[in-house]
Image (tube, rainbow, N blue to C red; front, side):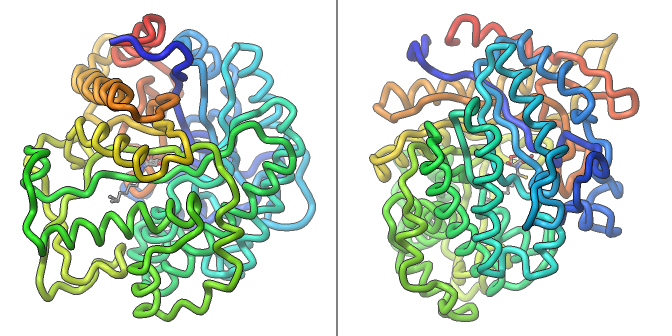
Length: 456
Ligand code: NCW
């Protein structure tokens, strides 16, 4: 299986998950500093204070990327390094770090893919309401422009937000992520303000001459339990309605406004039932609908649902009344996430058909497993099998006509896995968090060969 000649191979990380150095060079506090330091929020009380110490070791880490032959590296910028409180003057020492990183990547012939927001909101903005407050969207656009002004001469590929569904619904809905609020109305408001921030920022990036702009979503095929193992299974009417509803809340809620400038009726209805839709102002959809080039797809597993008559909405899913979240009959990763590789091809083909105006890129795919270091090696056969299985499906999706430009593995390094702390390892490179030693896992060596061959 050989991939198209210009197919982009790479890896991804995020600032709070790898950088550490949380008090250095004028960095302000983020909601994840606050959240991880409050007892009970993160497994083992882990925090991102040190993480992979990438802030100090970025040159060695770029060396690893070069060794693997990556063509692209997707990283995120920590907003509180650039504007410690989230607004006002720019902190040049914070920007300088990313300036050095970009130069090191270009020197290694690796294209930088910059994500502007991967969940580390400045705490100062959270104190003014965070994403529940409309003003945050405008502050985000200012920040995006400041970063583009500095890096835009060397960075062509820009992502505004990573997984706005997660920011809104885990951050403000079920409280599993920072800032830990549990309020469906706040979550729905946040989702809209995240979208508004995306649109406003996308326009500033475009005006500044950005080459490619994308929005990254945690999309997934929504399937009944029967459809997981049998793509041809036809659900009954009630189950089909549950599937449609969750697909709308997970994917259409974000891509319909961003790509087509419309909100699905079900989303507006859900907002009406959860605090009202007054936060959606006239003209917002036009702003959100700023032209983008690509949708970034982070895929890990399908979302499995069926009809659940009389069930209340799940805390992370306002509007999901009458839906039961089910389990897939499939093996799972260490996160407990089911492994369903052909979910990826089903998803990509559908998104390409539903949103023909944009290209697609797999901006994250990968898995956590219980890795063991033996004589300085990590034989992560399960991760190799996961990646191999999913890459086959990427190839199948391209064959089926999906407009897919590249694939980025999550993640380059083992890192701070949010509420799971350091106990869940997604890296293709093992990190010993006591010594900061990096070791290529078997999956990294395997991936290097895939890249070199441009295929499987
Ligand atoms: S937790 C999560 N992740 C992992 C994280 O390390 C990365 O930063 C994220 O972009 C791996 O990839 C993403 N995502 C949250 C998934 C929540 C799924 C909730 C159900 C939706 C169907």
